[in-house]
Image (cartoon, rainbow over all chains, first blue to last red; front, side, top):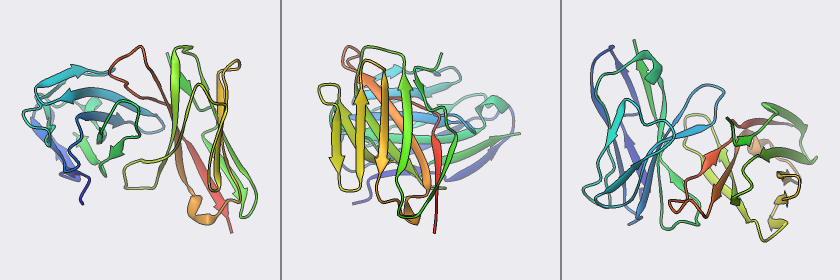
Length: 112
Length: 114
């Protein structure tokens, strides 16, 4: 049982480039989330999804887009990378509202 | 505006002693609280939670206390072990927000000295 899998683990982007952070879960969880963690800060919610075809903005959605075409996958898209998007990105899923999340191991992104 | 605050960025404790990690919140609508533990280069892992209808929840060496009037919760680890050395995040959510999004604190780095 792999849980939540994120790829890639590391990536360096140049300003203005685009990329997609992949997130897949094999637990049949309805709820999925994208967080970013900046140094010395807590996790900030970027986007979340309560089921396939349904997504909504979190606290810090600017500069990102998501889609949820299947229960398993919840990719995060950066269209025009900026240095402010340098961070560690975590994807998470949960089976219901009132339940602890399962997190992936993170993607460390550097924009130069 | 930080709704969930962990004012101590770090804590150092001797092995075998008690570790107490604190968390304060400002949103009175929060009704569910969780603690997560994070090792370097890994994602956070769920540790323990508490609903606002309780004031204490215990799981082995870990106990979470909730003081709603003070908008304060704490995580006690007894006895502390070197393997407990990690960053601990407090998180909270509000039922009125039907998506049940978690709001995280900034974390406390715990070091348990052998």
